[in-house]
Amino acid sequence: MIIECSSCHSRYQYDEDRFERKPSKKIKCAKCGTVFEIHNPAFATKAETDPGDATSTRREETKASAPMPRIDDTTAESNIPSTGKQLNEPALPAGRRLSLAIIDGPDAGSVYRITKPRVTVGRSGADLTLNDSECSRQHAAVEVRDTIYLLHDLKSTNGTMVNGEKITDATELQDKSEFQVGTSTLMLIVTDES
Image 1 (spheres, rainbow, N blue to C red):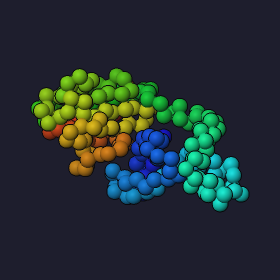
Image 2: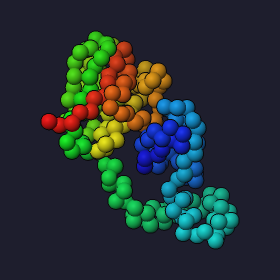
Image 3: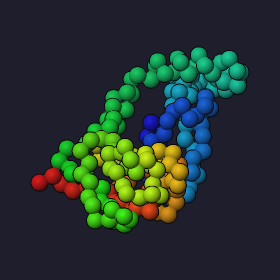
Image 4: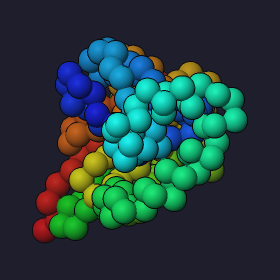
């Protein structure tokens, strides 16, 4: 699912399994540092269908055996809004050219054209291989979902930095956004296809 910061409106991909059967979680925005609450769609969908039973629903959710069937039921019912989710499937945008420019580090001056929706960056075995000893073998990934560009850290040793801070969740990039892997600084460049 895609979540959005209530303050700066940065968007991130969030794995619904991370809710751990809880109705909501507090998340810290990697961009502005604001702590905001996100709601588990499995619980939100059920709450909308039973507005009169809110108190009894909360009591049932506190029982250890109740949440599992309730989640299965809501997941089955939530197929209706799946068209919105398909819009966010990894895909390159039409009429746009995406590139990663290495602007600092051992490979500075190189430009890598993004030709598939998910590109890995790392020291070896990655789509974009860097000659950077501070970079993990599979360090980070840029995922393109039409006009949304997400940066993921792939559990690298030194972390992936955006605006001087390590990212923990998917971080949305814009045209000319810079990020750091190891000692290398990369910039996402989005141009119109000519």
